[in-house]
Amino acid sequence: MGCVLSGNETTDYCRDIETYLCQKNEGHLIRVVGPSFDLVSGWAAQGVPLKVAFSGIDRSFERYYRKGPRRRPLKIDFCEADVLDAFDTWRRAVGVSASAGEPTGGDDNTEHRSKESLPAHLQRVVMRLTNARAQGSIDETFDAFIDAAARELDAARASAGGVRGDARRALIARLAALDGALLQRARASLDEPARASLLEDADTQLGSFRDRMTPEAFVRVREAAFDRLLRERFRLPIVAFE
Image (cartoon, rainbow, N blue to C red; front, side):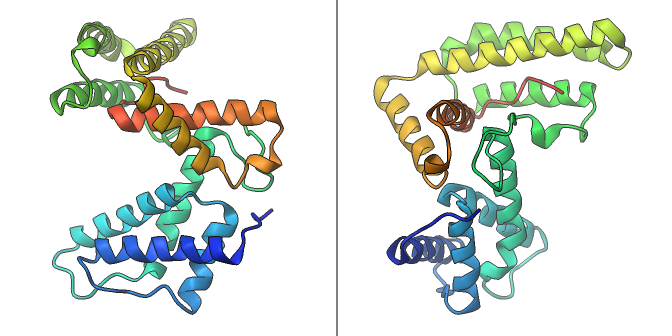
């Protein structure tokens, strides 16, 4: 089911994408018109949040840069697969279905499921926690938690490859608990203006789906969207594993 947008809303969405594309192309103006306008209008109709579309465009440019010196500006059409992939990841993370805007029971760890072993997951989590502190995205109030979590995760990583049955289930449950504790610490560190800003961003991202959800469903999905933005703000890894 598509989202019903006014002509002005769709045009504004396309112009915002055009502006972002221009910035990514170092000032070269690549117009979003004709078939490109139809393409981007389709993203708007599906409810792809602007920030999610921007993240997909970023992926396309990162891959383009890795190929060496650019020969010409990148058109929006070449970003379609990355934008839709970013949208799918976002929907799964916040628990919104593609068809009806209803919660799917998704979680932030969907993108890692079946793609990563438990030891590799633990190694990535420890590295990202350490990097978050080194890059200054989290303050000293996280230090004790990170030190304790890193020690626990390092110990778990040493044995994770051989953990089976009840021991493995207990470890996975512990990772979920650590993930919840990390998010709780992050929430507590926010002042009211920062919290209000993240909630506003979550509402903006979910605006296209809100009318198709029950109030209860929207509360659950909004909380998931808020937590995802919280992770992005502090560059926090997903500790939970499935």
